Amino acid sequence: MSSSKPLFERVALIGIGLIGSSLARVIRREGLAGEIVISTRSSQTLDRARALGLGDRYTSDAADAVRDADLIILSIPVGAYAPVAATISPHLAKGAILTDAGSTKGSVISDVTPHLPRHVNFIPGHPIAGTEQSGPDAGFDSLFENRWCILTPVPGTDEVAVKKLARFWTACGSTVEMMDAAHHDRVLAIVSHLPHIIAYNIVGTADDLESVSKSEVIKYSASGFRDFTRLAASDPVMWRDVCLANRDAILEMLGRFSEDLAALQRSIRWSDGDALFDLFTRTRAIRRSIIEAGQEVDAPDFGRHPEIAKGESAKNEG
Ligand SMILES: NC(=O)C1=CN([C@@H]2O[C@H](COP(=O)(O)OP(=O)(O)OC[C@H]3O[C@@H](n4cnc5c(N)ncnc54)[C@H](O)[C@@H]3O)[C@@H](O)[C@H]2O)C=CC1
Ligand SMILES: O=C(O)C(=O)Cc1ccc(O)cc1
Image 1 (cartoon, rainbow, N blue to C red):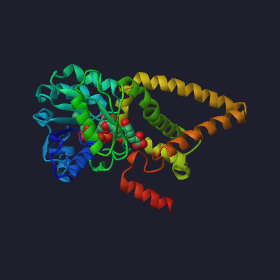
Image 2 (image 1 turned 30 degrees about the vertical axis):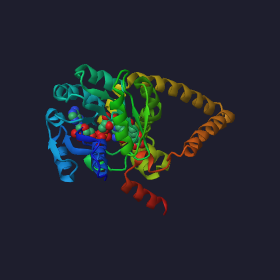
Image 3 (image 1 turned 60 degrees about the horizontal axis):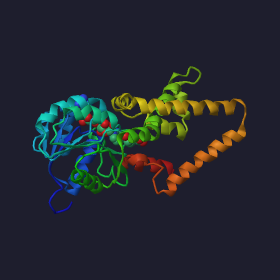
Image 4 (image 1 turned 90 degrees about the horizontal axis):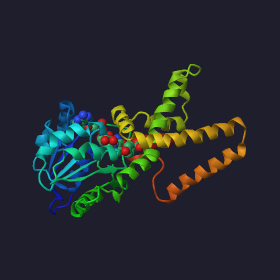
């Protein structure tokens, strides 16, 4: 914890699940805020946040939480942004930075902007860091370490505010990248949204099979299938909202995916071993470039909870 003046005087965290509680923990550890105010819709979650000592003040009234805050971070499902923005907007302080952690960015901009007064700096953000867990107990202070955080400010946003928010994410351990919201949504559709949708689908298909029993699926699941079940265990509300909010980009990528799957299916039907070999060689190279770029690819993927990762590596070791 640094002894210098905190970057922000009062940070209001709206939503205190995996992302909000990880932010609370790293903000506290790094001394990034004079005061942490926590607000969430459910009183049970708020009680849990209090019991965990995540903040300095707790309220179920989001309007009350944002009053006099110089940084407000929304860490709630993207489908909930519009009503929350309408509730907090009249109470936002002049010059405050309003940001978020949502997995989609175009929808967030269109849902929040109409409610905002001109004196607020709205800078959408997305930490590319998470796990399949949710709730305040699931968070941890190293979640954002060595991860990307994408900011998608709209043209004309105050540069000083953008730089201050970038410093905040850097202090949380992330590397900040700027991107246009529409581009963000297409990139994330293929690297994050589709993998989750495919995982939900394959696990659903396995669950629906009549010729293979549920207990066989559980008993014989190889590590590939297990990886899918981890993703398919992600929060249903969050992913329902992502699918609805990033509909166009997801449908575009699903279209491409289905075409390529049909081609793969044809290669198998016609026993075209060369086509299979060529595709599998090309995709193997992608994983190798991820490793060469210094990004983690094995567990703990996407900053899996340290305790879970520890348990899994112990299991893997024997
Ligand atoms: N889980 C992940 O791996 C990642 C999630 N995100 C994004 O971060 C945001 C938060 O996700 P998590 O922390 O994982 O979710 P979570 O489910 O762990 O926590 C969500 C929080 O939002 C509150 N909330 C739910 N509905 C609400 C509503 N209608 N109004 C007000 N508050 C409400 C809940 O009480 C809870 O405090 C989402 O937008 C998600 O897309 C971004 C990166 C990674
Ligand atoms: O748990 C995983 O593998 C993830 O993919 C985590 C994740 C989920 C949603 C995001 O917007 C960013 C990261």
